[in-house]
Image 1: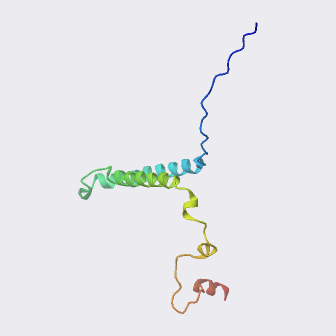
Image 2: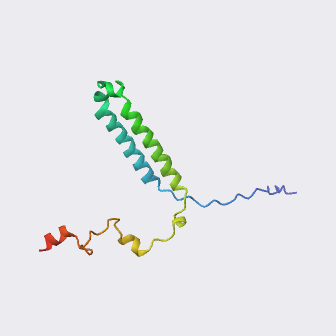
Length: 118
């Protein structure tokens, strides 16, 4: 008489596609933001502590920088959840645009480059 254990029925788990976040870049950005906040504090604490305009609050700029850093990080994490396909495929013209328009009469020539070439 062999004792065969009946197989347990396991619930099938739904397969979730990995999100594909680049945690290295996220970590580097967080370190740089933290470094920036520390540098703002170290460069401004004495000035704000001795100035009545800031109510002698040595954390005045630290609070402001931290607020905007947190809002920026929240926006960044929010944008990480939007698939890049939502924005569509960039056209080749989008890569060529610099966002700066030519001055009248310039016709796509950069004056500084013309000076170097001549």
